[in-house]
Length: 419
Ligand SMILES: [Zn+2]
Image (cartoon, rainbow, N blue to C red; front, side, top):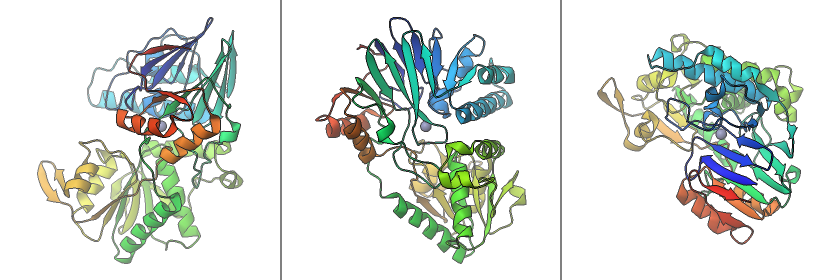
């Protein structure tokens, strides 16, 4: 068996791993590089392409395959959300006047080529998917061929959240010949989740007390729904007082529809509710014009680059009664949120503005931190572990922690390993 790391080695973005046995060749993920506009030039000669989850750094190059007859395998919610995100990518490219060689039909072709499965058998190769936590519908991918077993984690976490269970190590294959492990936060430990949630509610409460606005930039997929449900439930349980709460993002609202119709992916508590993502206290708005202040607003884009979050950041950041809650761990260097947080300034159409609002980063991540990564390796005892999907220093920090349990290797981009 051969494993080739086509993308996501020593970096985050463009995840794609080719696994080739005597008879078959499959791709594990088919992602796009962060910040890049066009799909990556990845090989197309795969018997099947398995998609771990709907983040574009794992699925965003699929348009490359739209004019062949690909077999794409993944969960239902991964299919629905990937299709929405590809449509959105095409729309943005055309809106910006870029020459982009794909149309809506190409995104639909991807959806039509999708096999919703949690296991498939190819001649000489069997593949099994395992829930990975992280985001709705995310899976780890196990491949069995040539007498070897490998497990690719995709992005995962062991901790559960208000809406999603974490991955369960007892359901995963023990002592695989190779574990291909994400290492995004390989060098970092996070405070317990309850502490972070308490911090979030304190920030919201203190802003409510001074009748300020709370801006929560969030990604359209999963983080947005999870935050809305969290705040909705807190108001239902009187943990937070009633206040105007809105979500603004057409894309997020469409994805919320999939969440309601795919309840089986969520916690038992969520499954008991009839329409769990039809919120009682949180209203969906199409534009910022309809906001009745003071309010809590969950909106896109997640990094404050564009859309409602950029508009409200510019509108609200110079008032000290307001607050901005960043729940992403990573922020691109040029993102308005990063500049607002670290330098206390913003540039609105070229005019510099001082940030007076409180800017708090409360990292409610869907990735495993170092403790969870070590916990997974300890439970599975893989013979070999390849660290990917992380900056080199994160991978090295993790490597030090697991080297006594497993043989660790940090592959380079495009490197091929024979098993
Ligand atoms: Zn992800």
